Amino acid sequence: MSILVYAENWDGRFRKSAFEAISYAKKASILFQTNVKTISIGAVDNTELERLGEFGTDKIISYPNINKSNGKAIALILEQEAKDCKLIILSNTFNAKTIAPRVSAKLMAGLITNVISHIDNTENICIKRQAFSSKAIEKTKLNSNIGVLTIAPNAFEINPNPGDCEIEINNKEIESDVVVLGKDVNKGKISLSEAEIVVSAGRGLKAAENWGMIEELADVLGAATACSKPVSDIGWRPHSEHVGQTGKAIAPNLYIAIGISGAIQHLAGVNSSKTMVAINTDPEAPFFKAADYGIIGDAFEVVPELITEIKNFKNN
Ligand SMILES: Cc1cc2nc3c(=O)[nH]c(=O)nc-3n(C[C@H](O)[C@H](O)[C@H](O)COP(=O)(O)OP(=O)(O)OC[C@H]3O[C@@H](n4cnc5c(N)ncnc54)[C@H](O)[C@@H]3O)c2cc1C
Image (cartoon, rainbow, N blue to C red; front, side):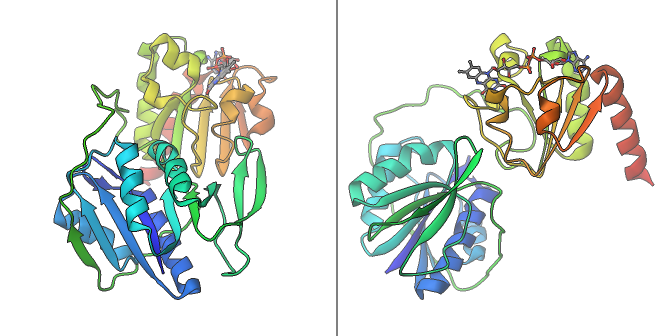
């Protein structure tokens, strides 16, 4: 019996979410006294696979010829690799949403998404998960022999755990029934889903050309940039930056909302942030009720001042 992990890569690079998934699986494997087996899909070089091997997995099986967008094929591979597994762990990414339900159906396995707690019992597996767009925490019990868990990003520690890790390459090919024709990639240097700090702006910024100061603030803070839905609908920012109920759900340590009213659909995607700061001219803006800190003021005055102060602080 093993614990199986799907470690997702982006253009051949593994990110924090893959390391979180393996660290989570490693902890469970100690409890179940078993080993961790990790599946990688798509072209990844050996150095990167070795880097992945430093987080506690005993074996990595890489399928370089399977398309990373082919959820059906990935589910098939996971089903085949999960024959002797108790748990299948994925990070709760967009892609996992198309893979995990398929794996769960194939294996007749219980599926628990958005997991935010570790397993502490091998008999009675009870797990906490985020529910209702992160507005509630649900306690769930796994009632099947095999479980598929998708773990919430930024909810678990990464534990480097270097040891012997066998790397196997499987050149199997499965034709894709979905072909990706183009990508609207987030231009920010930092991945929005995994960022520790996110600087986000809304319609209060008034025009696309005013985003220079938002990018500069993100730059000095080492943050990713995000936006409200209307901003990406108008075309001021790419859709990849849209957060909320219909966009990305994120959980950074710090979320700075600038000129965003704080509509419930926006908060649904960001209220798992550990600390939220709102900057808004309107003292009645709903964001102030959800935020930990609020600045009532004009973004065009507050943001440049913040940038100057943060630069001064860094220089001293
Ligand atoms: C089914 C559905 C799904 C939706 N999904 C999403 C979603 O996923 N994400 C999302 O964001 N929205 C979503 N929405 C839209 C949501 O309801 C709001 O309309 C949207 O979030 C508002 O965006 P905003 O705050 O940028 O703009 P506005 O509501 O126009 O707010 C702009 C804010 O900027 C402030 N402001 C103005 N000038 C300044 C200034 N100079 N300095 C500082 N502050 C200033 C204003 O006081 C105001 O609070 C959804 C709506 C529906 C119906």
